[in-house]
Length: 101
Image (cartoon, rainbow, N blue to C red; front, side, top):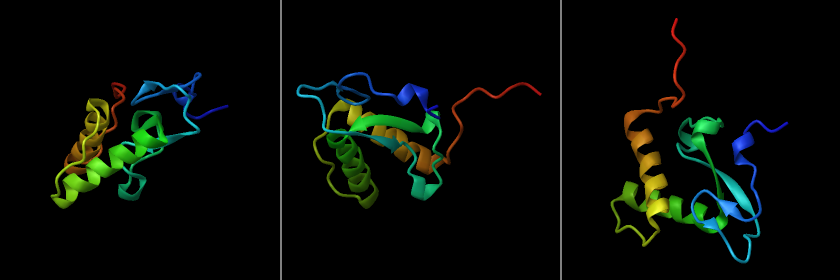
């Protein structure tokens, strides 16, 4: 049983580019808040992306963190990169609604 059922890939679907033709060789689980910075491996912190999308997200994040000119990326790639940067800046907050105590 998969821990992240929403991350199973159907055909050639990735979170960034949606449909590919030809289908991507592989897809990877991208941590929105990087694992190295304490990002959990939970469904609300993971995206299933193709290698190209994964590289582009990280390249954008890295350039922004270092103060370099950002590479040309798609709006989706930029969105997910900026989401990760915002989580780094503000501290990771679990996106799931909390149960009332």
